[in-house]
Image (cartoon, rainbow, N blue to C red; front, side, top):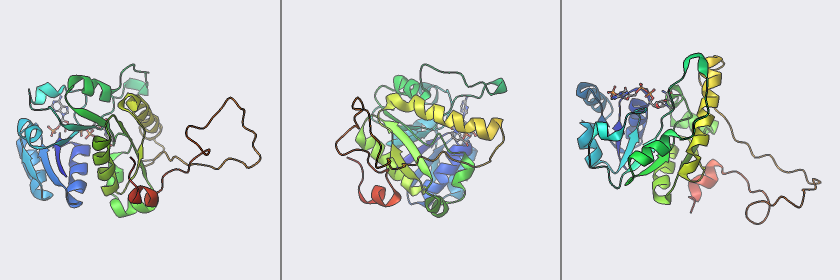
Length: 240
Ligand SMILES: NC(=O)c1ccc[n+]([C@@H]2O[C@H](COP(=O)([O-])OP(=O)(O)OC[C@H]3O[C@@H](n4cnc5c(N)ncnc54)[C@H](OP(=O)(O)O)[C@@H]3O)[C@@H](O)[C@H]2O)c1
């Protein structure tokens, strides 16, 4: 996959590096061309200006928090898959205020001819430096949401290549849930200082055999609760 990395800070440089190592064609773009050129040289990738990279790459990782896309590049966005990994600025005193609009939805509003997928906002950048084999052995999960299956499939593959177990969380309107989930994690790491590298883990416990469910509740789909995806099931059978 050809993927443009917009912004070469902590997350952009790290994900770009590991995707390049996984065999993807990575092109870095930065406000400082010498920075993106150095990264490209170090990680067998290429670099370019923001307008060049936007024009060239069908898939773009957008790491610039609350920077409007037209500020980077006035046109050439139509038809792109935009991966939004951003989280809101942390407020003084770690006040996590409810927000009406997710950052991903804002980006989608700014880029109406693109498909935005919210992804890679949960894990701290340090985690990826363990490498894909270690993350795979730990069963580290990755949550994403977006509107079209073809864009989500790209993100699913990119997550697998980082060693993550990807979970499709539905349409982009749910991005606020992923951003809140990441804030919940940031509360533990950055405010309470409880772990440098941690994760939330979705676990599917079985229902007790003798549990009598109220008739008012019905499981979505037939046949009761389904098992959560595992690395094996995800790798063998991509979602429809
Ligand atoms: N770091 C993490 O652990 C982590 C984890 C999950 C999600 N996130 C989210 O991912 C996003 C990026 O995080 P990060 O840690 O990579 O941040 P970062 O190190 O500050 O990198 C962001 C990059 O965006 C560019 N940039 C930022 N503000 C800009 C502006 N006003 N104008 C032009 N360019 C600007 C800069 O790129 P150049 O230096 O190349 O010019 C900067 O290095 C944030 O929204 C963050 O909340 C971060």
